[in-house]
Amino acid sequence: MSTFNQNNDTQLTNLIVNYLPQNMTDKELFSMFVTIGPVESCRVMKDNKTGYSFGFGFVNYSRKEDAARAISSLNGLQVQNKRLKVSYARPSGEEIKETNLYVTNLPRTITEEQLEFMFSKFGRIVQKNLLKDKVTGMPRGVAFVRFDRREEALEAIERMNGTVPEGSQDPITVKIAEEHGKQKAAYYAGFHAGYNQSRE
Image 1: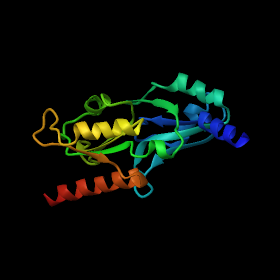
Image 2: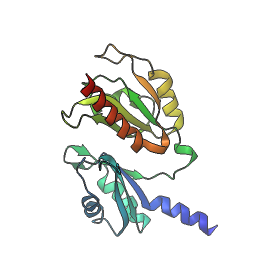
Image 3: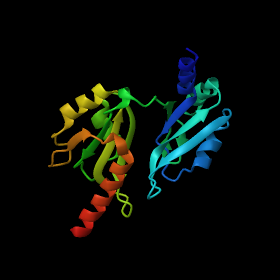
Image 4: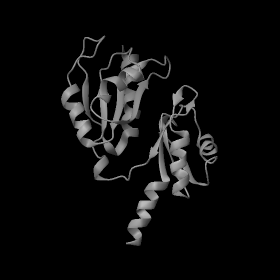
C-alpha cells in the first residue's frame, strides 16, 4: 500500500515543461523553477550526439504542493519567443504508447500555429516539434505531434494521413513515431533532410 502512495506522490511532484526555447540550459530551467520551492532534479531533454534540444524538459520537486504551485504560476509564461506549457509528467507505460505521431511531406511554409490548428481538432496536443533546417531556419516539412491519448493519435492518423494541406499539392504522411527513439527519429529526419538537399 505504501509503495502505491509513494508512486502516486512521485507523479504529483514530477513536471514536464514543454515549448522551451532552443538555447535553454538545465541551469536556466532550474533557476526558473527553484523560485517556487526546492527542486530535486531538473533536465532539458537533448539529443546525445548533437546536443540538439527537443524543446522540453522535466522538473521534479521535493513537495507536491510546490509542483502544483509551479503549474499555476509558470504555465503559459512567455520565455523568449516561446510560451511555456507546464503540467504533470505522466508515468511511462501503456497509456502513452503510440501517442507520438511522425508527420512528413508538410508544406515548407508551415508554422507551429498552423500545425497546431491542423491537429488540435483530434484532441489535446501535449507536445509538438516542427523540424527546421539548421542553416536556413526554414521548416523541413517534417514534424512530431504528441497527443494526450492513444485514441486521439489514432484518429488523427485515420483522418489526416494522405490529405493535402492548404497551400500544398502533395498529400502528407501521418504515422506513429518509433517510441524507442523520438530522439533517434528527430536525428535521422534531420540527417536525411540535409542529405537530400545536398544531393539536389
